[in-house]
Image 1 (cartoon, rainbow, N blue to C red):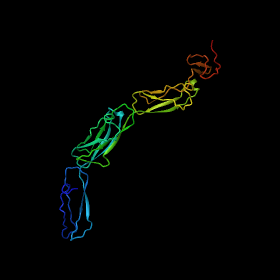
Image 2 (cartoon, helix red, strand yellow):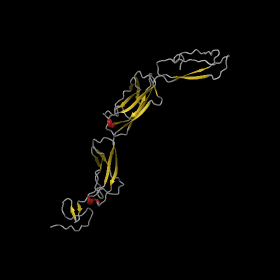
Image 3 (cartoon, helix red, strand yellow):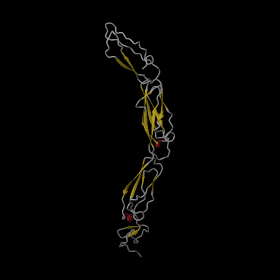
Image 4 (cartoon, rainbow, N blue to C red):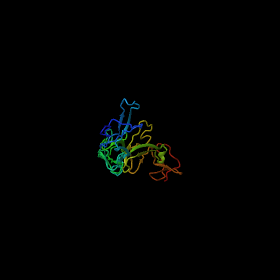
Length: 298
Protein backbone atom coordinates (compact mmCIF):
# COMPACT_ATOMS: atom_id res chain seq x y z
CA UNK A 1 0.00 0.00 0.00
CA UNK A 2 1.23 3.48 -0.86
CA UNK A 3 1.13 6.37 1.60
CA UNK A 4 -1.22 9.05 0.26
CA UNK A 5 -2.58 6.83 -2.56
CA UNK A 6 -4.04 3.80 -0.78
CA UNK A 7 -4.43 5.46 2.62
CA UNK A 8 -4.41 9.00 3.99
CA UNK A 9 -0.89 10.21 4.61
CA UNK A 10 0.40 9.50 8.11
CA UNK A 11 2.26 12.09 10.19
CA UNK A 12 5.03 9.83 11.44
CA UNK A 13 4.40 10.50 15.14
CA UNK A 14 1.83 9.54 17.78
CA UNK A 15 1.44 10.95 21.28
CA UNK A 16 0.61 8.81 24.31
CA UNK A 17 -1.27 11.20 26.59
CA UNK A 18 -0.32 11.75 30.25
CA UNK A 19 -1.81 9.07 32.45
CA UNK A 20 -2.41 6.75 29.46
CA UNK A 21 -0.58 3.57 28.53
CA UNK A 22 -1.38 3.60 24.81
CA UNK A 23 -2.44 5.66 21.82
CA UNK A 24 -3.99 4.81 18.45
CA UNK A 25 -2.73 5.50 14.95
CA UNK A 26 -5.79 5.73 12.70
CA UNK A 27 -5.45 4.66 9.07
CA UNK A 28 -8.02 5.97 6.58
CA UNK A 29 -8.16 3.97 3.35
CA UNK A 30 -8.46 5.95 0.10
CA UNK A 31 -10.75 4.80 -2.72
CA UNK A 32 -8.59 5.04 -5.83
CA UNK A 33 -11.20 3.64 -8.22
CA UNK A 34 -8.98 0.68 -9.10
CA UNK A 35 -9.64 -2.95 -8.36
CA UNK A 36 -6.45 -4.30 -6.83
CA UNK A 37 -5.35 -7.22 -4.74
CA UNK A 38 -5.40 -6.86 -0.98
CA UNK A 39 -2.41 -4.74 0.10
CA UNK A 40 -0.42 -4.48 3.31
CA UNK A 41 0.71 -1.55 5.46
CA UNK A 42 3.54 -2.07 7.95
CA UNK A 43 4.62 0.51 10.54
CA UNK A 44 7.96 0.39 12.35
CA UNK A 45 8.71 2.35 15.54
CA UNK A 46 11.76 4.57 15.52
CA UNK A 47 14.16 4.85 18.45
CA UNK A 48 14.30 7.92 20.77
CA UNK A 49 15.99 8.88 24.01
CA UNK A 50 12.62 9.06 25.79
CA UNK A 51 11.73 5.34 25.45
CA UNK A 52 13.04 1.90 24.79
CA UNK A 53 11.80 -0.26 21.90
CA UNK A 54 9.87 -3.42 22.51
CA UNK A 55 7.89 -4.90 19.60
CA UNK A 56 9.07 -2.63 16.86
CA UNK A 57 6.65 -3.25 13.96
CA UNK A 58 3.11 -4.31 13.07
CA UNK A 59 1.24 -4.99 9.78
CA UNK A 60 -2.35 -4.46 8.66
CA UNK A 61 -4.16 -5.39 5.46
CA UNK A 62 -5.99 -2.92 3.22
CA UNK A 63 -8.53 -4.77 1.09
CA UNK A 64 -9.58 -3.18 -2.13
CA UNK A 65 -13.26 -3.96 -1.73
CA UNK A 66 -13.75 -4.79 -5.44
CA UNK A 67 -15.17 -8.12 -6.67
CA UNK A 68 -13.18 -11.27 -7.31
CA UNK A 69 -14.42 -13.34 -10.26
CA UNK A 70 -14.18 -17.08 -10.77
CA UNK A 71 -15.30 -19.60 -13.38
CA UNK A 72 -16.46 -23.24 -13.21
CA UNK A 73 -17.76 -25.71 -15.78
CA UNK A 74 -21.39 -26.46 -14.92
CA UNK A 75 -22.33 -28.63 -17.92
CA UNK A 76 -20.36 -30.53 -20.55
CA UNK A 77 -21.37 -30.30 -24.21
CA UNK A 78 -22.20 -32.96 -26.80
CA UNK A 79 -22.18 -32.98 -30.58
CA UNK A 80 -25.54 -34.77 -30.35
CA UNK A 81 -27.02 -31.48 -29.07
CA UNK A 82 -25.87 -29.44 -32.07
CA UNK A 83 -28.61 -27.09 -33.19
CA UNK A 84 -30.70 -27.67 -30.05
CA UNK A 85 -31.29 -25.51 -26.99
CA UNK A 86 -29.14 -27.83 -24.87
CA UNK A 87 -25.64 -26.37 -24.61
CA UNK A 88 -22.46 -26.65 -22.61
CA UNK A 89 -22.17 -24.13 -19.79
CA UNK A 90 -19.50 -22.22 -17.86
CA UNK A 91 -20.66 -20.16 -14.86
CA UNK A 92 -18.81 -16.95 -13.97
CA UNK A 93 -19.33 -15.69 -10.40
CA UNK A 94 -18.33 -12.48 -8.62
CA UNK A 95 -17.60 -12.41 -4.90
CA UNK A 96 -17.29 -9.22 -2.87
CA UNK A 97 -17.80 -5.69 -4.08
CA UNK A 98 -21.12 -4.06 -4.86
CA UNK A 99 -23.88 -5.76 -6.83
CA UNK A 100 -25.53 -2.45 -7.71
CA UNK A 101 -23.93 -2.32 -11.17
CA UNK A 102 -23.45 -4.82 -13.96
CA UNK A 103 -19.96 -6.28 -14.30
CA UNK A 104 -18.46 -7.16 -17.70
CA UNK A 105 -15.93 -10.02 -17.46
CA UNK A 106 -13.58 -10.81 -20.32
CA UNK A 107 -12.19 -14.25 -21.12
CA UNK A 108 -10.13 -16.13 -23.71
CA UNK A 109 -10.04 -19.71 -25.02
CA UNK A 110 -6.93 -21.49 -23.80
CA UNK A 111 -4.58 -22.58 -26.60
CA UNK A 112 -4.39 -26.08 -25.09
CA UNK A 113 -8.05 -26.72 -25.94
CA UNK A 114 -8.45 -29.61 -28.40
CA UNK A 115 -11.84 -28.43 -29.66
CA UNK A 116 -11.71 -25.92 -32.51
CA UNK A 117 -13.77 -22.73 -32.61
CA UNK A 118 -16.04 -22.63 -35.65
CA UNK A 119 -15.60 -26.36 -36.33
CA UNK A 120 -16.53 -28.08 -33.06
CA UNK A 121 -18.46 -25.21 -31.41
CA UNK A 122 -19.79 -21.77 -32.29
CA UNK A 123 -17.21 -19.05 -31.67
CA UNK A 124 -17.46 -17.44 -28.21
CA UNK A 125 -17.76 -13.67 -27.80
CA UNK A 126 -14.94 -13.25 -25.26
CA UNK A 127 -17.09 -11.35 -22.73
CA UNK A 128 -19.90 -12.19 -20.33
CA UNK A 129 -21.97 -9.68 -18.37
CA UNK A 130 -23.07 -10.29 -14.79
CA UNK A 131 -26.27 -8.21 -14.49
CA UNK A 132 -26.81 -5.66 -11.72
CA UNK A 133 -28.15 -7.34 -8.61
CA UNK A 134 -26.79 -10.74 -9.71
CA UNK A 135 -23.67 -12.55 -8.62
CA UNK A 136 -23.20 -14.84 -11.64
CA UNK A 137 -23.73 -15.25 -15.38
CA UNK A 138 -23.42 -18.12 -17.86
CA UNK A 139 -21.24 -18.64 -20.92
CA UNK A 140 -23.09 -21.00 -23.29
CA UNK A 141 -21.25 -23.32 -25.69
CA UNK A 142 -23.21 -24.42 -28.78
CA UNK A 143 -21.69 -27.48 -30.47
CA UNK A 144 -21.40 -28.07 -34.22
CA UNK A 145 -21.98 -31.49 -35.81
CA UNK A 146 -18.91 -31.93 -38.02
CA UNK A 147 -19.74 -35.50 -39.07
CA UNK A 148 -16.26 -36.73 -38.14
CA UNK A 149 -15.47 -39.70 -35.94
CA UNK A 150 -12.94 -38.41 -33.43
CA UNK A 151 -12.16 -38.59 -29.71
CA UNK A 152 -13.96 -36.39 -27.20
CA UNK A 153 -12.43 -32.92 -27.14
CA UNK A 154 -11.84 -30.25 -24.51
CA UNK A 155 -12.57 -26.54 -24.29
CA UNK A 156 -10.75 -24.47 -21.64
CA UNK A 157 -11.75 -20.88 -20.86
CA UNK A 158 -9.45 -18.49 -18.94
CA UNK A 159 -10.74 -15.32 -17.28
CA UNK A 160 -8.76 -12.18 -18.20
CA UNK A 161 -7.64 -9.51 -15.74
CA UNK A 162 -9.30 -6.08 -15.78
CA UNK A 163 -9.43 -2.89 -13.71
CA UNK A 164 -12.99 -3.61 -12.59
CA UNK A 165 -12.32 -6.94 -10.85
CA UNK A 166 -9.76 -9.44 -9.60
CA UNK A 167 -9.41 -12.97 -10.98
CA UNK A 168 -9.33 -15.75 -8.41
CA UNK A 169 -5.84 -17.21 -8.21
CA UNK A 170 -7.04 -20.83 -8.45
CA UNK A 171 -10.49 -20.36 -9.98
CA UNK A 172 -9.73 -18.31 -13.07
CA UNK A 173 -9.87 -21.22 -15.51
CA UNK A 174 -12.30 -24.06 -16.28
CA UNK A 175 -12.47 -26.93 -18.78
CA UNK A 176 -15.44 -28.73 -20.34
CA UNK A 177 -15.57 -31.89 -22.44
CA UNK A 178 -17.28 -31.89 -25.84
CA UNK A 179 -18.60 -35.39 -26.52
CA UNK A 180 -18.03 -36.34 -30.16
CA UNK A 181 -21.22 -38.49 -30.21
CA UNK A 182 -19.65 -41.08 -32.51
CA UNK A 183 -20.94 -44.56 -31.74
CA UNK A 184 -18.73 -47.22 -30.18
CA UNK A 185 -19.26 -50.71 -31.59
CA UNK A 186 -18.62 -54.03 -29.88
CA UNK A 187 -19.13 -57.70 -30.71
CA UNK A 188 -19.95 -60.74 -28.57
CA UNK A 189 -20.74 -64.36 -29.35
CA UNK A 190 -24.38 -65.00 -28.50
CA UNK A 191 -24.77 -68.57 -29.81
CA UNK A 192 -22.37 -71.38 -30.71
CA UNK A 193 -23.18 -73.64 -33.65
CA UNK A 194 -22.64 -77.24 -34.75
CA UNK A 195 -22.88 -79.31 -37.91
CA UNK A 196 -26.12 -80.76 -36.56
CA UNK A 197 -27.58 -77.25 -36.73
CA UNK A 198 -27.45 -77.53 -40.52
CA UNK A 199 -30.34 -80.01 -40.38
CA UNK A 200 -32.47 -77.74 -38.22
CA UNK A 201 -31.62 -74.51 -40.01
CA UNK A 202 -30.12 -72.95 -36.91
CA UNK A 203 -27.13 -70.63 -37.06
CA UNK A 204 -24.41 -69.52 -34.75
CA UNK A 205 -24.63 -65.89 -33.85
CA UNK A 206 -22.38 -62.95 -33.10
CA UNK A 207 -24.15 -59.78 -31.89
CA UNK A 208 -22.77 -56.38 -32.89
CA UNK A 209 -23.90 -53.47 -30.70
CA UNK A 210 -23.49 -49.72 -31.03
CA UNK A 211 -23.39 -47.49 -27.98
CA UNK A 212 -23.80 -43.73 -28.21
CA UNK A 213 -24.22 -41.79 -31.40
CA UNK A 214 -27.43 -41.14 -33.28
CA UNK A 215 -29.79 -44.06 -33.93
CA UNK A 216 -31.77 -42.24 -36.62
CA UNK A 217 -29.77 -43.79 -39.46
CA UNK A 218 -28.35 -47.25 -40.22
CA UNK A 219 -24.74 -48.04 -39.35
CA UNK A 220 -22.62 -50.38 -41.51
CA UNK A 221 -19.92 -52.14 -39.49
CA UNK A 222 -17.01 -53.97 -41.12
CA UNK A 223 -15.53 -57.17 -39.73
CA UNK A 224 -13.12 -59.93 -40.74
CA UNK A 225 -12.58 -63.56 -39.84
CA UNK A 226 -9.55 -63.78 -37.58
CA UNK A 227 -6.60 -65.60 -39.15
CA UNK A 228 -6.31 -67.63 -35.95
CA UNK A 229 -9.71 -69.27 -36.51
CA UNK A 230 -9.50 -73.08 -36.92
CA UNK A 231 -12.83 -73.34 -38.78
CA UNK A 232 -12.49 -72.79 -42.54
CA UNK A 233 -14.79 -70.47 -44.46
CA UNK A 234 -16.73 -72.36 -47.12
CA UNK A 235 -15.82 -75.75 -45.66
CA UNK A 236 -16.91 -75.52 -42.03
CA UNK A 237 -19.26 -72.55 -42.33
CA UNK A 238 -20.89 -70.52 -45.06
CA UNK A 239 -18.66 -67.59 -46.05
CA UNK A 240 -19.50 -64.38 -44.24
CA UNK A 241 -19.94 -61.10 -46.16
CA UNK A 242 -17.63 -58.99 -43.96
CA UNK A 243 -20.19 -56.30 -43.16
CA UNK A 244 -23.25 -56.07 -40.96
CA UNK A 245 -25.82 -53.28 -40.93
CA UNK A 246 -27.40 -52.06 -37.71
CA UNK A 247 -30.79 -50.71 -38.87
CA UNK A 248 -31.99 -47.19 -38.15
CA UNK A 249 -33.55 -46.96 -34.71
CA UNK A 250 -31.76 -50.10 -33.52
CA UNK A 251 -28.70 -50.49 -31.35
CA UNK A 252 -27.66 -53.94 -32.47
CA UNK A 253 -27.70 -56.44 -35.30
CA UNK A 254 -26.20 -59.83 -36.17
CA UNK A 255 -23.87 -60.95 -38.96
CA UNK A 256 -24.89 -63.84 -41.19
CA UNK A 257 -25.16 -67.30 -39.62
CA UNK A 258 -22.05 -69.42 -39.40
CA UNK A 259 -23.30 -72.97 -40.04
CA UNK A 260 -24.22 -75.16 -42.97
CA UNK A 261 -27.93 -75.39 -43.53
CA UNK A 262 -29.64 -78.54 -44.79
CA UNK A 263 -32.72 -78.58 -47.04
CA UNK A 264 -34.06 -81.63 -45.18
CA UNK A 265 -36.06 -82.20 -42.08
CA UNK A 266 -36.96 -85.29 -40.18
CA UNK A 267 -40.41 -86.32 -38.93
CA UNK A 268 -41.60 -89.30 -36.92
CA UNK A 269 -42.26 -91.20 -40.14
CA UNK A 270 -39.16 -90.30 -42.06
CA UNK A 271 -37.30 -87.53 -43.90
CA UNK A 272 -38.92 -84.89 -46.06
CA UNK A 273 -37.66 -82.03 -48.16
CA UNK A 274 -38.27 -78.45 -47.01
CA UNK A 275 -38.00 -77.26 -50.55
CA UNK A 276 -40.49 -79.73 -52.06
CA UNK A 277 -42.73 -80.11 -49.03
CA UNK A 278 -42.92 -83.84 -49.88
CA UNK A 279 -42.03 -87.16 -48.32
CA UNK A 280 -39.13 -87.74 -50.70
CA UNK A 281 -36.08 -89.24 -48.95
CA UNK A 282 -33.08 -86.93 -48.72
CA UNK A 283 -29.80 -86.77 -46.95
CA UNK A 284 -28.26 -84.11 -44.71
CA UNK A 285 -25.25 -82.14 -45.83
CA UNK A 286 -22.05 -84.11 -45.26
CA UNK A 287 -24.07 -87.22 -44.25
CA UNK A 288 -23.53 -90.26 -46.54
CA UNK A 289 -26.05 -92.51 -44.76
CA UNK A 290 -29.48 -92.76 -46.37
CA UNK A 291 -32.24 -92.60 -43.73
CA UNK A 292 -34.60 -95.52 -43.53
CA UNK A 293 -38.35 -95.65 -43.43
CA UNK A 294 -38.77 -93.02 -46.08
CA UNK A 295 -39.59 -95.01 -49.22
CA UNK A 296 -40.73 -93.07 -52.24
CA UNK A 297 -44.43 -93.09 -52.95
CA UNK A 298 -45.37 -94.32 -56.37
